Image (cartoon, rainbow, N blue to C red; front, side, top):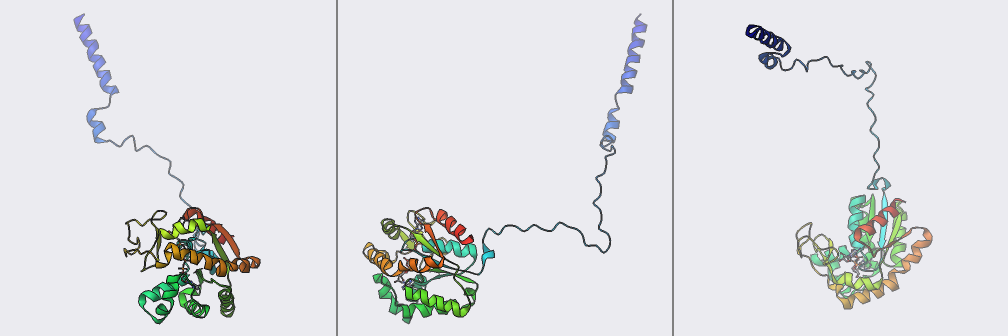
Length: 285
Ligand code: ADP
Ligand code: ADP
């Protein structure tokens, strides 16, 4: 009986050995199972000789920047402190057109101590307009520079009807046309707060606000690190005079451009990005 049991156990062991693969065998040929025949993916058809490779033509991407609208000649008008300079920076970099700010040109001349600078300094300090016969030739000269031939963003020019008429004549002579006049509307009540908190970079003209748009490092320009300044004409007593000048001499430009179908009114009492959004969609229309 004991012998029969031993024989049965030996038989059982032998059958187990046959069923289980040898330990060593599995280690020696690890990839056996993976080497199963796999259906190869069909090869892409080779283009016939002489026929160009039929690669898909890249689809045109929508031009979100609006550069396809070039050449663009745009005017930004609005009371002092409306946000023209702030929006001008955004428009100029988005549409890749130079920013022509007569205020910045005058401030640069004052800083450089040129004849022009000496002439206009007291006018700017008092918040009075520089006479048309000084301003118009400066703009004409700037417009003739190579970077300005493919479109210009005017900020703060024209500021009087004679300046607007002069610009029209200049454009006619150059075979150019004005595409759009953007009016940024901000009530006087919001202007004084904007002007008292405005800080400007005397080097590159960048504009900040101590609350609404502070620089990363207090008092320093984000772009060039220069110390920011408060413009002398941003004192509250000068600001009211500038607003009066705007109403008397610049606001009539609205009635000048509106019948020509060029005017786009934008509500300036929103965040700078929201204002830019409206300007952007207005320009693409
Ligand atoms: P703001 O940005 O506050 O409207 P600007 O920088 O445009 O001011 O202008 C500052 C000052 O420069 C004006 O108050 C005015 O003395 C002078 N100025 C700027 N542009 C003109 C212009 N087109 N005609 C006459 N004076 C100008
Ligand atoms: P402008 O060129 O019309 O005189 P700026 O662009 O210099 O106006 O703006 C005047 C001040 O108001 C700046 O201090 C600027 O940072 C701030 N500012 C500009 N846009 C806005 C806005 N949408 N909301 C609040 N403050 C603004």
